[in-house]
Length: 287
Ligand code: MN
Image (cartoon, rainbow, N blue to C red):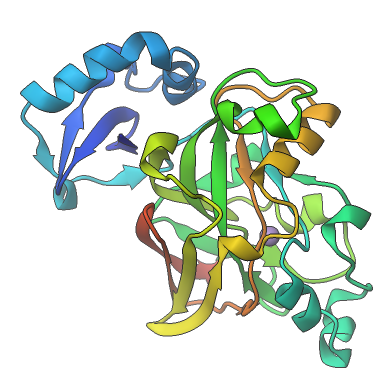
């Protein structure tokens, strides 16, 4: 199943190039605040699933290209992310030139653990990344994100995959420099998610997915999730030892190599195998 949020707070399921409205089934109200219908759907999925499948079979859809997609998880209680989780990315961050930009030595994830991005930085496909500092390097990172399906605390690696509801694409937009990651990666619009939330049954091997990113049509990143240093079970085990994970929490698994700077006017596109493709624009932040 491929879940989307569209036209404000509507919740839908993708059927080929159509989107089937299931807002009534999941109780997604327009102007709802906080916008937690998808989190509720995920938490109650086992119960809702038969009605959602029925709707997918029987309801008429709307053309996907006529709706405006939002982030498939608009209000995660947390966005957890993995720093330095691909060796080639650590290498590219460790050149003498990059050391000047990043102001610190870059180690592998086992030296850092995980970090948090502000949930308020989440936006959807078609959004605009707003650069807060025109004079500071701000980079793109394409990442596979997984979404937590049930409350998880102290989960062992062997049990971890049962806590994964599904997968989505993440851009982990990052100002380079010496500040804490939670600052540099939490500006509004710095976490585009999408285009859809794909349930785990449609992604038999999340540790073998190609991740690509283009800037203005030029391929900049082309990696595979098989190269993660900490895999998904390890990330679940580690993160759930630190904090209770709730349905709808997003965990971004780190970027492969090929990161690079963005500038106003750019268009950034990501494509993750089995998950889909989405684009966002880049502009300077409005004063
Ligand atoms: Mn990242």
